[in-house]
Structures are given as structure tokens and as C-alpha cells.
Amino acid sequence: MVSRVIPVAPFDLVLFGATGDLARRKIIPGLFHRFAVGQMPADARIIGAARSEMTHDAFLNLIRDSLEEFAPKAAAQPDKIAAFLQTLRYVCLDATGKAGWDDLGQHLRPETVRAFYLSVSPRLFGDIADNLNTQGLATPQARIVVEKPFGHDLASAKALNADLRRVFDEGQIYRIDHYLGKETVQNLMVLRFANALWEPLWNATHIDHVQITVAESLGVEGRGEYYDRSGAMRDMVQNHLMQLLCLTAMEPPSRFKPDAVRDEKLKVIEALDPVPPDNIARGQYRAVKGDGGYRDHAGDPQTRTESFVALKVNISNWRWAGTPFYLRTGKKLRARSSEIAITFRDPPHMIFPKMAGRRGNALIIRLQPDEGITLRTTIKEPGPGGMRLVEAALDLTFAEALGPHAEAQDAYERLVMDVIRGDQTLFMRGDEVEAAWTWVDPMINGWEESRESPAPYDPGSAGPEDALMLLHRDGRRWRDLAP
Ligand code: BG6
Image 1 (cartoon, rainbow, N blue to C red):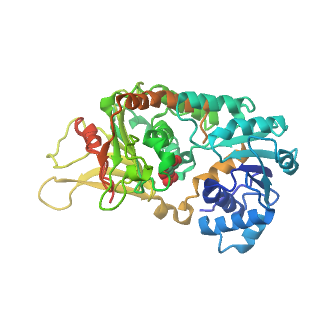
Image 2 (tube, helix red, strand yellow; image 1 turned 180 degrees about the vertical axis):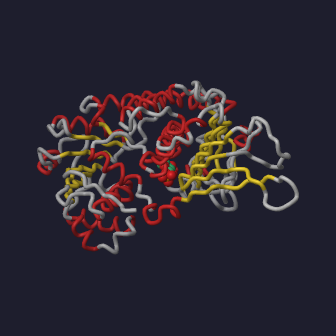
Image 3 (tube, helix red, strand yellow; image 1 turned 60 degrees about the vertical axis):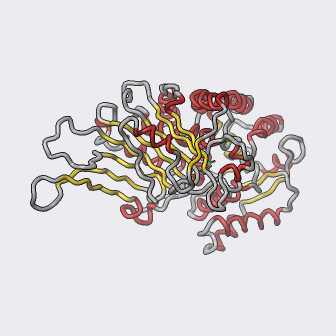
């Protein structure tokens, strides 16, 4: 297999918040990798913009240090680093005032694609957009890229959309959900829509239920203060899990074009039933043996923010009525493991002896780690002694099947190049984000009104008991989180 790198056109990328954590960890290393493989033209310009007074050389040193720390392959490529640093410039700029904007304008080339990447607090989106406008920098070929969190609730998401749309058309706005940049998440669309095999089975007639799990083994250490204002519902469900749900449940779009895909995702969100409190389990990890619990990390001994949430979700449409989707995500769980598990219904009539513990067919799409696909099937146990059945897996582990080409790029690499190419397929549209908040808000408001605390769970477990019950009472069980 030959890896194909299609170079993008020359561009000017302004990175607001260039000295911040996300820029240093993800965006700059991602750009470097694209540069190193030859996708980024040598005359591309990356203009770091931030509040700090800093010389050009000091900025380059910061970037060099970031690459050493966060781009493991960079150290072996000193020539590439030197060439990459040539593409960088730095502008000290006041996002909410007037200082620095003229200087920024000097670095931008009139005919070149320009992208403004806002790796800053959403509070600054409106001011930056307005400044870009008044300085005449928001040209028709400009794009603006924004990070999550995109709002805290429906009202704030609408306000952010209004701030951006004062200056930019929807076709110029790129709202990042980095889950859409993950190879395996994109593969979900290919699995569904490039193979005729699944489609006839992909509905409530044949699928018993779907489990979507995004489990993390780390806690909120260090990010406690931010996270406590958000919680698992806002931080993960409203965006990442919602995207996984949409890609699993949506109708085949007529073509692989941004609005065709996003229209279908929106229809899924709009078909979600409101979730009653009985179908929600919330948890918060507790302290054990000197290891701080969520409340210690959040710095608030009374906090009612959830570090775990599980939901039973019904989709009211022809394809899915009667097939629940169970979603769960949490911090400090037994394993870091993200997957989508599609469990099929049993054969209508079984001619073989009952097999203890048989779980039936399931298609498991492993998103991370150990990306791949497993199809759980029932086979005959070899040997004499009658027809005994066992379960065995057809296993496709991408790393084995695809060799070096399975090496996943970081999500940001793909997404930033899509911005330059002008492809919005893997970005959230404004109405999609608002629809997701419309669905999530009543659940969060319900918790705030009830003032109930989430149920405590042990670090290293699979979450609180309530989450297990959510499936048990339907005669089902969660898949094990690999230890
Ligand atoms: C982020 C959340 O969006 O996604 C984090 O804010 C979470 O809380 C992270 O840890 C998970 O991303 P990944 O790529 O590590 O699965």
C-alpha cells in the first residue's frame, strides 16, 4: 500500500492562543507532521498570535521545545524542524482591543487562503471576529476555526453562533469536534457506506441494542476547575458521544459532501426522545487510599458535577424505534477504552441445544486503543460429543491488517488540513450544535433543580451501580471494560 499525501495550496494560518496548551500539544505538532510528510507547502505561513510580548526568536524557541516534547518524531528530523520554523511568525496582539491588529494584517497575503484558528476562550470569539472584520481581514476566502466548548447551554451556543455569523458565513465557520478527526471515527462511515453487507441488517429489525462507550482511566487532575463547570454531559456527551451516535444511526447521505452528511446527522439528533431521569445514571469517583477523589480534584467538597454519565437513549424514527442506544462515558474508570458495540437479535428459532452464557452476534468497532473491528459469531466447538456451541471472534485489528499505514495521524492533523482544503464534512454545523444542546439542556436543568448528588463510584471500576442497573433491568449488560 502506498501512502498518498496530496499537498494543500499555500495558506496563511493565524493561530490565536499560539502559546497555549492546546496549540503546543496538538495544533503545532500536527502542523509539523503535515509539513514533514510534504503536505504543507514550504511557503505556507503560520502566524502565532497571543497576548504575551515575545520576540520572534523566543517564539521559535517555544515552538522548538513544544515539538521536542509533543512531537516524538520531530527529534530525528532536525532539518525538517529548521525548515518548519521558517514558516512561523509571531504577532503580539490584544484580542479585545486594537493593539497588534495592523501588524497582523501585514503578514497576510491578499490572494492566499487564510484561516483564523481560535484556540482561545470562547469569551473572545466575538471580539476577535469583530476585530477581523473592522481590520478588513475577514475576506471572502477566509475561514474561522473554533474549539469546543461551543457554549455551555443552548442560549450561550446561540450567542456564539450569532457572534461568528455577524462576520462570517456558515460556510466559513469550522467548529472542531476532534472525535470527527479520528481515523476510526471516519472509518465508521466507510464501514457502513462502502460495504453493502451491513445496511440490510442496520436497523431495529435486526439490531437488539447499541452500546457506545468512551471510558477514560485518567481523572480530572489539573483540569478540575474547568471540568467542574462542565461535567461529563457537557464535556463528552453533548459533542463526542453525540457525534458517534449520529454516525452510527444516521441514514446514508446521498453523497459524501459536507451538508449531505451534516443534514443526516441533524435528523438523528432531532429524532432523539427526551431522556427521563430513570434512564440516566450519574456518578462521581470517590477518593481511595490517599488517592484524591473527584471532589478533591475539583477543589469543592460539595460539588455535584458528574465525572460519569450513562444514558438509555431512544431514537424515534423508522430505522431505530424499539432499539435502545446506551451511552456511557466517565473518568477514572477501569480502562481507557472507546468502542461502539452493535448487538444483533437472536435467530428467530434455535435448533441447537442452549449454550450457557451465549451473548449472540455483535459487531464491535474499537475506536481506541487497539483500533479495529470484531465480529462475535457463534460456531461449533470442535470435537466429538454433539453440537456444542461456542463464541469466537472474527477480528480485524487495523495495525496488523494495514501495517505501517495503520499508524493513526492525530485528529488535529487531518482537521487543520481540511480547513485549508475548505472541506467542512468533519466539522459541526451551527444547527447541529444547537440541536445537541436542545436535547442535553433539559437533563442538566433537571439535575440542577433536583440538587441530587451523583452516585459515588470507585476509581478503577466500571462506574456506579445505577449504570449497571440501566441495562440489567432491560435484561442486558454492559460489555466489560478491558482491565
Ligand atoms: C476532550 C475532553 O474533548 O476529550 C476531555 O474535554 C477528554 O475531558 C478528551 O479527556 C478525550 O479525548 P481523547 O482523544 O483522548 O479520547
